[in-house]
Amino acid sequence: MKRIVWALALAGTVLASPVLAQPIKIGVTIAKTGPAASLGIPQANTVTLLPTEIGGQKVEWIVLDDATDTTKGVANARKLASDDKVDAIVGSSVTPVSLAMVEVAAEAKVPMISLAASSKIVAPMDDKRRWVFKAPQNDGLMAEAIATHMAKAGVKSVGFIGFNDAYGDGWLAEITPRLEAKGIKLAATERYARTDTSVTGQALKVMAAKPDAVLIAGSGTPAALPQKTLKERGYAGKYYQTHGVANADFLRVGGKDLEGTVLPAGPLLVAEQLPESNPVRKVALDYTKAYEAKFGAGSLATFGGHAYDAEVLLANAIPVALKTAKPGTPEFRSALRDALEGLKDVVYTNGVVNMTPTDHVGQDDRARVMVTIENGRWKLLSATN
Image (cartoon, rainbow, N blue to C red):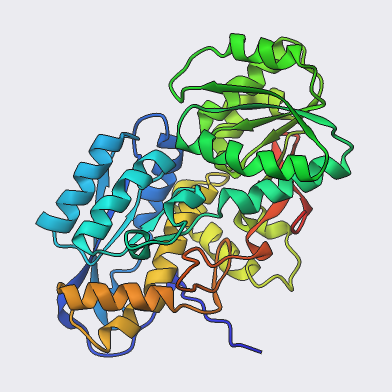
């Protein structure tokens, strides 16, 4: 059996050789404001918990706000790469911004770890994406779990309401063939913007198709709007959401209208409900304890966990890269990229990672659980499907 390796940032990570003079610089650009602030804020909070030393080397974290804006995210990435000369970039919080940042990472030859969901960020592998890795689960992994649950629940037709951007595009592309494979009809497809304040038209069109269930492909608090609208209009079918809603703000905004919703999520969300044998449980609970000790009980969000997981990946790769190059050099960035790609059996808050040259997420079924919302809380349904 392979040895499972994990790095606990909250305990100071790996301390090996004497601290070197040149710090490792990690640039972080996330959505601290804007429509995805409910994702970016816990990520920014998490950075304050991360170590300032890894592998005997000082680490400097440089955090910028991209306001959920693609143009600003790209500008931040360019500043971090050219002005700050960072050794790695973490971010952004959402798919559209992360996709745009791929170009910057590739041009600057700086390894990047995205905190967004779409598989398009890292696949198909090419010369640009070879510099990019991802902490959150691929939407395809989660879409398979949703389709499987729907089939077992007797769902025969589905209405889809998703963001009108790359996140919604990715989910529609992933869920459609999986529904077809299970004999489930996609009865209606509607889209909306993250900043919309009304989706009444879309909800009525979906309801007119009379689907057995509705899948809402949004993230953060904006994903609550379609469900609340459908509830107000009397839709009584099954509700499914994506892993993009796994935080307390979503529960707060959606309120009682979210009861009974089913979604896939990272195991961090229900860590205390996992069996003792689950390899993720201890790491996830340690992070939860540290986060809630600083930011309050019930404040945990899986989005913050993804920022922590990015550090775990770096903490395992940095000591390897330090063996061949010094921080602040092109050689170190290249060595760090290679080390990230070679990570094996790394346990973090949302799964166990085994990277390959063609898979820069490296997750398997251990990276997902199915949960429901019961009495305003997350409840574990099953470990994978």
